[in-house]
Length: 189
Image (cartoon, rainbow, N blue to C red; front, top):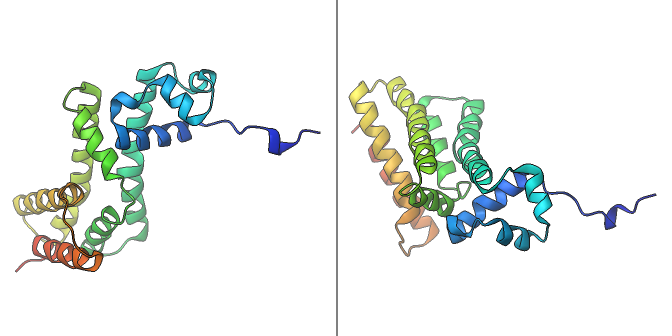
């Protein structure tokens, strides 16, 4: 009989991608080297190559993981809850500011996209998908196409900028300020 406590659990492709995304956010794309990753995870290169053909394949998996958890999973959760368009927009805004999205990884991917075609394509695609979710919500609130697109861009800019602008403030004050900005963008005067 095998003692399960002594059996080292294998890392799955998902765990590799999760670790890669976290490392990317903390240290940048240059830190996603096979030797370094294996050393940090205390596994052999065989574990890595079980799931990936090489570094390029791994980087693609990290980008796909980011797309899913930072966009599609969030949209799916919001759609599953249902509700009015303004409820969906608020849910997206709240979830984006709740810590679910790792904005250090988001920033690292955007920085990486400046010098890497694959990362640039991923960023363009995700920006487009996020806006394609928001525009119909604003349209359903009876905004014109142009106004819906403008409000979408403003709200999306607010979400992204909140993650990169450092401001020393109490959490309650931050939430209040964010909600005032949200209300200004979403609700007509």
